[in-house]
Length: 220
Image (cartoon, rainbow, N blue to C red; front, top):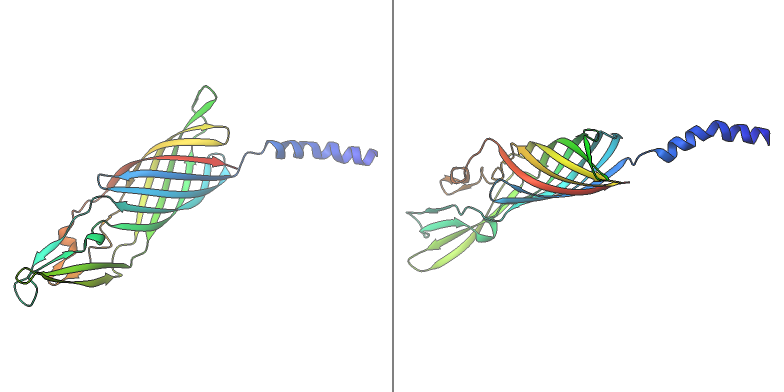
């Protein structure tokens, strides 16, 4: 009996520490806007090595709600003009985003909620393969046809940073943030050639992109 009591007394600090151990897993959902024509959705998971440091990643999707409509005139052959098919004008891509999560300790409190600043550098890896439809038209006969074009040559890897103001309560948190990236939404379409034109010439070019987002999540 004395041995059992001794073991329990010796183990009590470890049991107390285990009871006080903070959650190590963190999951979240994010929705945001990337500059003026694209939205993004992302689900992510991070394992917390420390309350202020986590590693993990996310699965995301971005898509334009307003797309450009590249087109051109043809002066020889059966067809007089071409354009990218309506269904393919709005570019959308799935991506994977391995990341590191850095979060400050509580800076101050609002009632029972703690306020933190979070910073998340990440990579965005998307599938390079792209397949689109191109419509050909003959203005003289009103005839038309659709032809498929594909490429694997688009840029597929980008970097992204997210800076967030995070409010936490118990094991829940809510963030609003700003993203800054070298993501080129048009990268997968730029190498495509249609007749003698390259689609890259039809799309705007920006060295960097930015956006705003909101995020909700929990720890367990």
